[in-house]
Length: 353
Image (cartoon, rainbow, N blue to C red):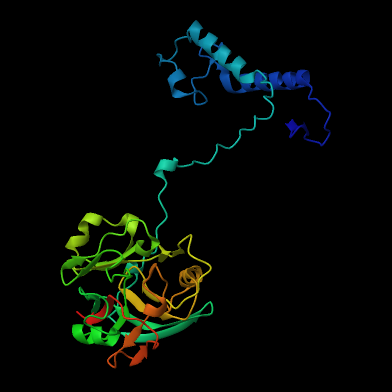
């Protein structure tokens, strides 16, 4: 018997003797025939036994009456069966090796997009009170207020008659709106007009800034009270008038948790920033002097309030940057407004809902 390319006794070159195998098989078959199939008949002649247990049921011949000689065709069928069963069969050799089928691969169109872990999917807890939060990220100092949009909201306090016509600082603007905290907001032209669209007290002013980076981001609150930060190219300009509040500023520093490309690397200045986690958590405040690019990288890595930043918008800065925190805020009061600051056109004020 050939075993794995050799022989059963370990000789790899031996070939079995087919003639000897045939002779031994023939003698075994004759012995089986005389022992199992030939029995004396009723008149002393041999006949085939009626025990067909070795044959499949479908080949079992029809029954006959006892004592009647077995038909000739029965002899022929039995002889053919004996010969077929005793004929040596050539060794088919080793079975061909079949390669395993390739693993099933789903069609690219059926692939499911990865699930994004949005801040809105986190377990919701009770709204937290506005709190002073400071941090130092990448050598940039942050000072501001973290708040929950479920209990507090932002409003734009504008001065239609120009910068300083009604409020000389953020504290005065906050007092007018009954606010807890206030910062300077959007950019304005030398003539005192808003550099971009503004919606305050259901009144729209300024013009849509379609090209400058200083209008690349929009803060808005819709009629249902939902606040958000949106990049300009994703915002429906036609819906601006229907907003409860809106402020166009820029550039965007972080969008979808990534630093925005093309931010300035050369001009450090004090910055006023609005930060959002994409859910209910917000932070607004002021930074130490830094470039826009450095600020974007710092916020993309971590947040000044301890939670990840999804979107961050740069507001007017430099000599316009100002922060006022009232005594009702945990950690307040606090004022950051240098003497050389100039008056501004509008403010963002934090108020209770």
